[in-house]
Length: 275
Ligand SMILES: O=C[C@H](O)COP(=O)(O)O
Image (cartoon, rainbow, N blue to C red; front, top):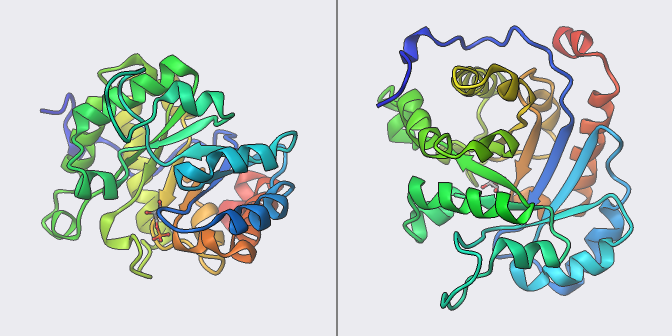
């Protein structure tokens, strides 16, 4: 049950809050030590004061990425994290361990974890809480399936996913990534307009709990983002960055997406909207 009438929430942002931009590369279960050694120096200077670049390689490579990225602005993140601080959980790692490796972020609740590892919203909220306790910023992924979109259930699905997160006060320090399942790995990204409409809805729903926190909270879009379509997506007022999967394995594509984010960060918001 959602706290508010879904139909009454706006879909157009009236705000142009100055939020920094984020470009997050999620390698999923791809890559190698050789790719780490190539990618980290290439991306170490790809951001600027307003644009942060975050690399999320597979867990076995996090130490090497941290070592290579030490002293640079490039940040790293886990692709998942346990909901416990420690325990008999073979094959898992805690947020504290990520912090010890120098990670500042962790993806939480990616749709592939929900699908293949049966993660539910309560567990995902627990993981976000565990991140907060260890000083890690969770990047909480939400999104609807094609069937849910076509059945007109998108807003209800997103609210249900968000409601668990909103049970913890730590949501105010999270990042939310909207990733429609039908856009992931499909080469069929959401149009910038559709992504913007959905992001504005998400922000309005968060604002119904805490308007100030909602204005500050970074919202990322993920799903078939590449060097060719990033500009249109990143120019949208409620889209504060991108979560890039397949294209993040191509260093030149990540550099191009990062350069686009940097160029947009140097334009006043009203010019971005007019462009
Ligand atoms: O985490 C990244 C997303 O699942 C998007 O993946 P993709 O860019 O390959 O569609």
